[in-house]
Amino acid sequence: MLRAALIAVGFFFSFMLLYSFGRGAIDYIAEPPVATVESVFHKHPKEIAYSFDGPAGHYDRAQLQRGFLVYKEVCAACHGLKLVAYRDLENIGYSPAMVKAIAKQGPPQATFNTVTGDAGTRPSTPADHFAPVYYAGAGTPPDLSLIAKSRHGGASYIDSLLTGYQAQPAELLKQFPDAKTPEGLHYNPYFANLNLAMPPPLTTDGQVTYSDGTKATKAQMAKDVSAFLMWAAEPKLETRHATGFAVLFFLLIATGLAYFSYRNIWANKAH
Image 1: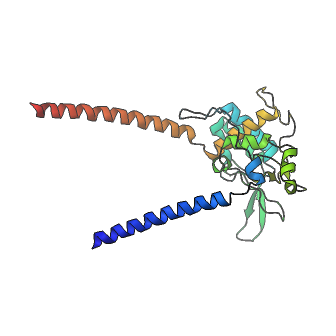
Image 2 (image 1 turned 90 degrees about the vertical axis):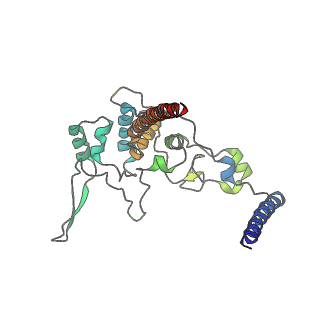
Image 3 (image 1 turned 120 degrees about the vertical axis):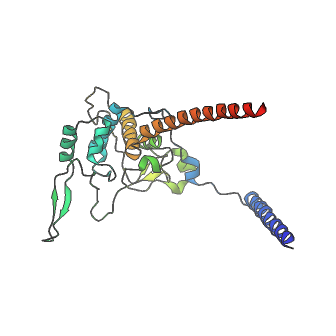
C-alpha cells in the first residue's frame, strides 16, 4: 500500500513538472517576451586581464598603490571603504610611517564623550577604518569595500563602468523613443538600467600623478583603481591561493602513500 502511494505521488509530481514545462513553452511561443531597452543595449563587462586572475594569481603592489592614489584623489570624496583599515595599506607596500601620514590626511573620526554627551572629531590613526561618506539629506552613496565581489565581472565590471560613459546611441532612441536618459543622469551601457546618477569620475588623462612614472591615462587609472578595489574586497587572495596549492600537494602525497600502502597490504594477502 505504501509503495503504491509513493508511486502515485511520484507520477503526480512528474505530471505537474511536465505540465508546467509545457504550459510555459506554449505561453512563451504565444506571447514572447517584449524586448526592453536594457535587454537590447546593456553590455557585459569587457574581458580585462589582471595579475590576480587564475589559481596562481597575485597582486601587483605597484598597481595597487596607483589604484589607491586614484581612489584617494578621485573616489574618496563620495565613496567610503568602511571595511578597510588604514593599517591594511601596509599589505600593499606602504611603510608604517607612510600609513600614519595617510591616516592623518584622511577624514577625521567621529567621537562621543559619554560623560558630557558632547560629539566631536579626532584625526584618524592607522587603527581606524576609512570613514563612511554621507550626503546631507541625500542618503549614503555606495561603499566600495566589497563592490568588486558584489558585482558580476568583479574588477572588469568596475573598469568597464568607469570607461563606459558615452552619449546615447541614435539606434537606441530610434528603437525606444521613450528611453531618453533623464536630465541629471548619465548613460552607461555597462550599468544595469543604462542610466546612473554618478557623473564620469575619470574625465581626462593625467587626472592624478603617478610617482612611479606610469602614464595616467583614463584607461590606466580605471584598471589600477579596479585592481585596488579587488584587493579591498579580497585582501587574502594570495594566501588563499598559496593554501590551495599546499592542500593539493598534501593530498597528492597522501594519495600516493595510501596507494602504496594498499599495494603492500594486498600483495601480502595474495600470497
